[in-house]
Length: 365
Image 1 (cartoon, rainbow, N blue to C red):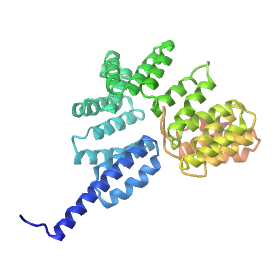
Image 2 (cartoon, rainbow, N blue to C red):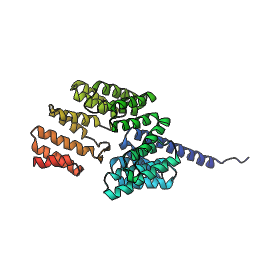
Image 3 (cartoon, rainbow, N blue to C red):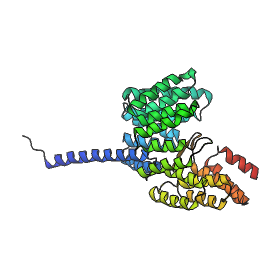
């Protein structure tokens, strides 16, 4: 029997440790992405790529960061590199599909059609590779639900995919079905479907947050239930910001100022890299039009650190820009016109397409 030399054994053990380390880093990137800690994703993925430019998982997660941050060209380049390394990874096809979907928001009418077809192609390829891929199902559900018939939109297919999704991911499946019911104004079904998502997995952060948000829709807000389910989500995972955002909005609407201050301290302690609850509370305070000093304090607090990237219905946008816009509105209400103009100018430097800030600046001038 041949005995392995100490040098050979050392090389083998070193390789095993490298593989284990890479797997641990990939798992950590997944955890951070699932919890929307995108700055931390970037901070971990960039050094990994400096060490190994062909680390496909680092390429993938940095691409996800850039997609959320609105750098679609950068995200596309990274996704394509990851896919070139591992063409059969369904996650990478899904990322391409997401990026093409984001680009649709900025494209002209003719380019939209080509991009929409790419959205479908990449998501369908992901499903070919992994039939129970959750994100691929969600992409295709939204594609078939929203796309015009001329490029393949088909609500019946979307419903069938949502029913299929329920079988292997009931939480996301019921949420998809609730979105259909909301679109069709079947509000009597919406609450029941969101509750089914929670019943399917009472420890699902997404299910609890989605149910909590549903009680804030329309004119019949139920503040007690918003707070109830958001606090349950917060107890499950104190390191995620979404629950604090909802509770902060709720407490500001109800003018429960001591409770709000306590919550903001708790949120900053548990999620120090995301001061979003301050902007959520400040926005409500500004809308109420009573305590502009408080609103200014919350907006300025949020501006003390780099924000997490935010994706909205308008596409990726700078929450810094949004905050400077709201700060400008607040300063105007406090008769500090020169400071308001400066804040609005800063908002437009950060996001030249912020139409509300453009209108406010034009009016103030």
